[in-house]
Length: 278
Image (cartoon, rainbow, N blue to C red; front, side):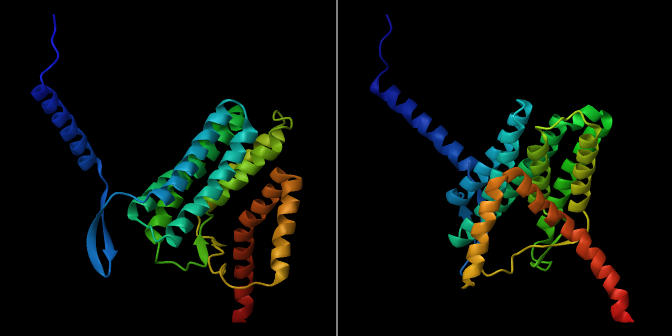
């Protein structure tokens, strides 16, 4: 007949369990150098609030892939737009609460890779590009690879380029125009050859524009804290009303215009420069 362990054995087991838990926490802790009062200090742990937004964006990107696999392309497209909104919030929350960190920046890039690289490429492929055969998955992979290259280049160029401009199409905008196209056209006859050609061109062009040297306006020089004319608020309200009428089509037109603005302005500057020299 078994007997209960003695108090000494129970205490030793609890001490061992506590040692294992303490060791796990210590060895898995994030440690990074940070500047505080002009001095480099080692900081343990991560900031919860901005990383919660990043995790939510990561979840939205993953949900988009799962929804596309299940054939729910509307939900997949909306999830990419939700990820886009959350991605715009995490950095602003970090700056407002003074909780920026190298860990948060790296985590954000990995989240962007899924939400704006892998997810749009797979959603477009599962919807229609897989019907094109090898060309379809090659174009989808081109988009994903270009998104990865775009994010890597953006990370190494931080602080060395004019904040007023993005060099290459931002990955969230590329993802938005792909997602809006899927959202708008998936209810139509996807067997039509024109849709397949359109998505091949759109996904491939979005990928190439991400790694191009074409400049896109970043809107970062707009002072959101300063006063603005009343008509500006009215225009924003009207914008929301127009988008709500037909969200998928309006978002496609909005982001399609932004994507096209880069090449159009680049061509206009190129045509204007010889005239200025003359």
